Image 1 (cartoon, rainbow, N blue to C red):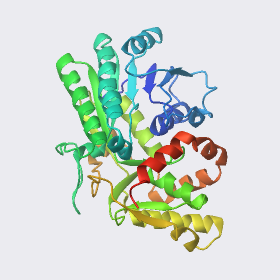
Image 2: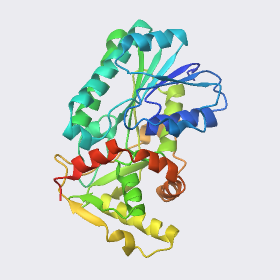
Image 3: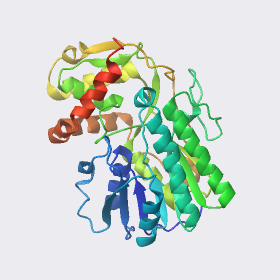
Amino acid sequence: MQAKRKVNNILVTGGAGFIGSAFIRYLLKKVPNFNGLCLNFDLLTYAGNLQNLQEVDKDPRYRFQQGDIRNEALVEHLCREHEIDTIIHFAAESHVDRSILGPQAFIETNVMGTFHLLEVVRKLPHIHFHHVSTDEVYGCLGDEGLFTENTPYSPNSPYSASKASSDHLVRAYGTTYKISTCISNCSNNYGPYQFPEKLIPLMIMNCMTQKPLPVYGQGTNVRDWLYVDDHAKALWMLLEHGLKGDTYNIGGEEEWRNIELIHEIIRLLAEMNKVHPDVYSSLITYVKDRPGHDFRYAIDCTKIKKEIGWTPDHNFSEGIQETIQWYLSHPDWIENIRSGAYLTWMEANYANRT
């Protein structure tokens, strides 16, 4: 394990999003030796929600600045003003379906946004840059095998291609300009505060409101599920101990076929609400599959476990129950999410799939 890297003042891009806000909550609530500044830099697009940070927004170590990661001058100014020594980069367009409907935003944010951040670090080379990426850059697995850090890139959607591009930029800047960088590629995250375009919160919320549960194809696609707080823990450990220029895979080692996962959510919700599972299972609606839908993702976490000492704190049974219970007990958060923009996107995405 590398000698401990000291994190004093950290800039968190996309800190109002699902994973970014989980990282900030983890940092401010569970890292006792962090005494510096946590600056949340977020544009507050559709998935950015400052409600995700209400439990820490009065912490004197926390500040928020609204802004665009493509605004290089502003980012540089903030880094100088607040003596930033670490950037952890979450800000991204992150949903495959949205990338299919409109890929341009993914190129502008995920590729060009990362480029502008790296240009800032090139000017301020004392800053350590950690890039948060996805296992989708590796492409598609068959029935067997796992993604390792040496798996060749083979992205199959505009989203995964944009993340692969940003990964390559980070790696190239580290090699060419000798700046301190690190990359992590994670499996599918789940947990509280997740925007309901993603599978698990979409199923929970649609069950709660008796709306159809759209299932792509036959629901046989497989995903590896990682509880978001375990991801946040891994990222903090990488900030402190990750090797300069290296890459680490982070996964939950919890594989589920989509349809089996949906039935598990239905079973748990029915149990919690004391109703028959048929009340929810009758809502399952098979829809036309997504173009280029990768069959299976699964991550080999051996490297981060052996070299960094990370292990997840939640198994899937615990994590999914906590997640469902959170959505059931936070109706105000859910109601605020149900904006006209969200409903318009849902209609556009599923309009021609029945």
